[in-house]
Image (cartoon, rainbow, N blue to C red; front, side, top):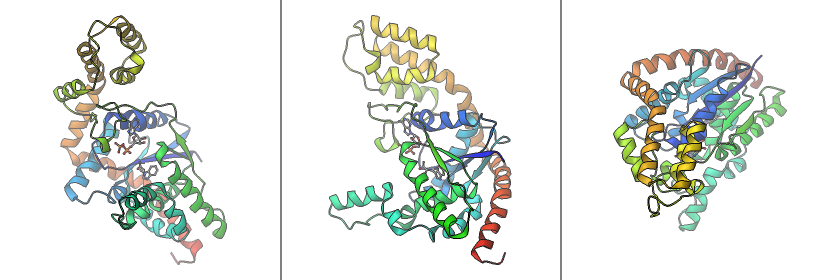
Length: 332
Ligand code: ADP
Ligand code: TRP
């Protein structure tokens, strides 16, 4: 049996360039490995811990699905689905909850961060924490273990969640015998952390993002907003200190990067650097943007693709859940 690579993205905001460089681009690279089976999904139930607005959740979920497809994910070659369409994951979620110690959840970073903040503000420690946030890692373990995943490509912030999935799997296996594969994480060490408009890490929490599929005019406007210093146009500039250059590198060819480096050293105006950045970015984004807009304009197409994907997913999850329930002593 081929080993499985699985990853999910939760629809909590507009996808931005940082998400693309840090998460989507490396995951699409992995999707080319024909030696493995791949599962990609929209983690909409995970978003529910934050997004409590139907229209917003629907729109953001379609947005994640359309983004994957617009950037070249081939739904025929991978299992591509919406988490909430696979009810077996939620049955497994409960089962795994009974093998996850509360202490393990207390130590999960996301929950701990809220508790620490509440303490600092002298609030009740659990203020603003719903049980979805508290048990978030268990649902993530169900996502991973349901598909006998070998490798989970994630950002650094998600490593602990994959370790928790291993712990829970191990605890189950020790009671009922070998059932779940123990997953490994794969972090994208080599990928850059893309800076945002203000020079800090691009993040929706900082409101400094360039959304991936904005229209060209808006893209140019946002690029013009990128913070630069007051070095006069003709003076040499250090490309390694420039946000513009960091972003440029991600979209230009090696030859263009070399040329731009020389232009920095011999003196280029920020205005010109911004113009050239727009050109390479827009060149890359043009086609996916069009595809994204097309898909977002016909959600029924997305539904159709996701429906076919969920059939493939449930062809795995249904028999496996049956096997698990049998082990637990439930008649199925
Ligand atoms: P945000 O910081 O905007 O809330 P998320 O936490 O939802 O983004 O991140 C989703 C994925 O995108 C993660 O795998 C994360 O590592 C990656 N990512 C987010 N911002 C950046 C960035 N500026 N540079 C590189 N990768 C990023
Ligand atoms: N928690 C992940 C994030 O915030 C999203 C996610 C949910 C996920 N389930 C997963 C990632 C399973 C990998 C595997 O980015």
